[in-house]
Length: 83
Image (cartoon, rainbow, N blue to C red; front, side, top):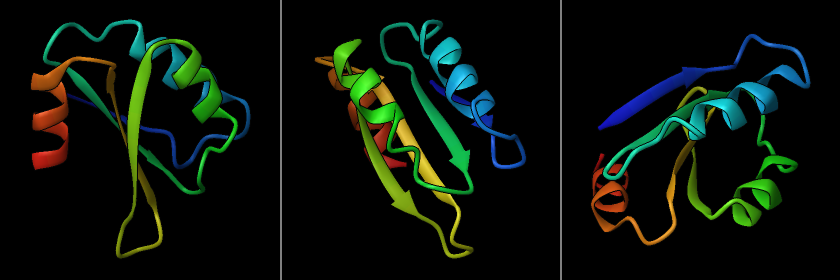
């Protein structure tokens, strides 16, 4: 199941904090779609350390879309990458 989080209008460090809080709520099969105005380079090592993987895309408007799911959750990965 997809969970959405739009942090594109928030000021630093709030996007990072909200994203980290949101991923704790992910259950098996769930993934998080984060909309951000810039690429969150500081987030990536924290995700990796926490056992999450991600895919980053740049949208038509230049907005970044980060899809995040738990490592080894094949159903969440399939849902996220198929979206």
